[in-house]
Length: 193
Image (cartoon, rainbow, N blue to C red; front, side):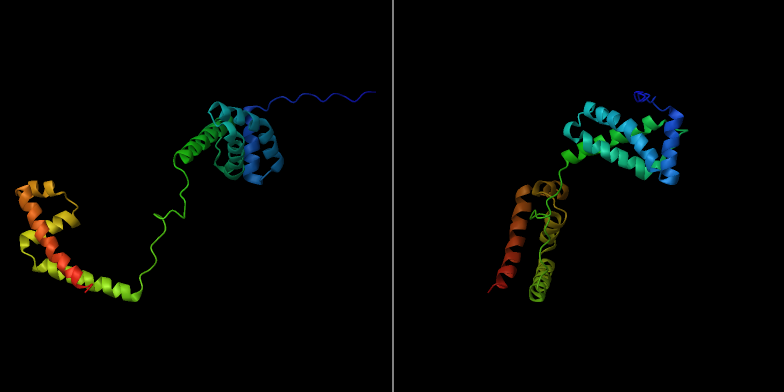
């Protein structure tokens, strides 16, 4: 007698699929997961291909199914069907992948991301001394020059903005700043001597 042909399995219904997810959530049921995987993985992969995932479709499908294993307890059969839940997860994974493509990984060796080495104690003392001399020099400037320096450097305003806000001619702002810089330059050049 020839072996009996395997009976084709019918697709599980909505409640049976929800039962599988709950079995994964409650018992960590591997066979329930395998059944869900067999049923949904090809469909999710096809869906992701339609969304334009291309070569990433397989990897994203794996991530979706891993999410089922890890987050099965978050599934609520009263709010959605298993297929709705899984295809929503798949869509979100695809969106995350697109965002990651648009925002490439940062290179940790990029000079802009590498912090400067710590200052030696001698260098730090020199910097503190320089800052004190600059602060003292600024205090010794005429008030209008000191205010213009504050506006230009601490508030990062342009010469035109300062002129408009202080109701001064642009040439006056520039000449006062030039005089203030001259005094500061003398102080800073004096430290190199």
